[in-house]
Length: 353
Ligand SMILES: *Cc1c(COP(=O)(O)O)cnc(C)c1O
Image (cartoon, rainbow, N blue to C red; front, side, top):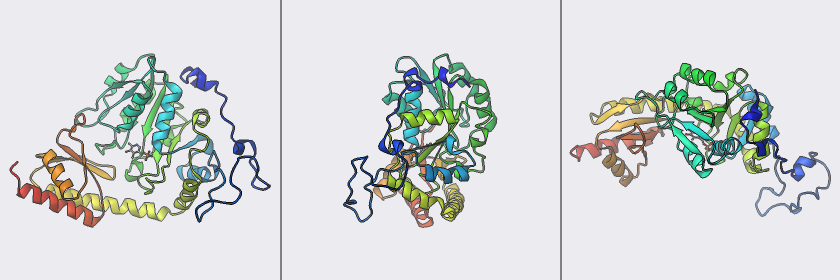
């Protein structure tokens, strides 16, 4: 694939910053090259040395786990960093555009706005599936990116696979980004396995959800090695802190936690759905392959406010395209979900809807 055609020339030709850790990679010696503090840190743990800028130790573990090559892996300070860098290396303000399919994750649009890149919105269908014809019509010679999220946030469904293939087959003058933040909760195979066939594909995953590491901030882009080397040129040199690399190293060897969380969340999701189904003011519960469900309620705005007053915090999605009357509910622990259900019941008992 001729990536040079859709990477901005100043990025393609960029001479990246070369850090002290890039220029000398050994572990032994007297280190007087990076202006670090030789006495250690003001914390019990020593963080005085700059971390590995390419995070090779954790990348080799992640590559094993995801069945890909280290050269296909980029790690970001959350997936959000990858989203921003992908936009910055492909799109010029006033020239290029990108396509998003609302209702979907809000950061694609915000990141485009921050970079002053115009977005073309092709809403999902009423069944929350891709409008493939609409996407193909929206593409022009200045389209550089198409963002697809599956399982999708906030709707929770996985998108029809054949539709995604059709987009991949029809568009190769820019990148197709498939955000798989919720793939661990789904029975759907990852599109990582399609990277060899579609070099213009970038898959995003994260440790924020199933791994329970939202606060550490570790997202990843899995893509063609050329794309990864470009992301590495553009990223801040030490974008993943030493503390994060250390904690992630530990996390990756505790797959039991991930497996158990996924199982328990699935059990709790089914039970929450059963309980919601018994409430007659619940108008629709949308199918979910994620760790949340989107639910349409009568008097949803008043319900949402009532829940907050009673210390149950959900996400009001009523103002989002196609989601009128909907609240997004993250699956909590058994007791938390029970508290939610009893507050919903209390609200409808005391309210005329
Ligand atoms: C939660 C989420 C992410 C994860 O973002 P991080 O920056 O890695 O925490 C990415 N995409 C979607 C659709 C999400 O819902």
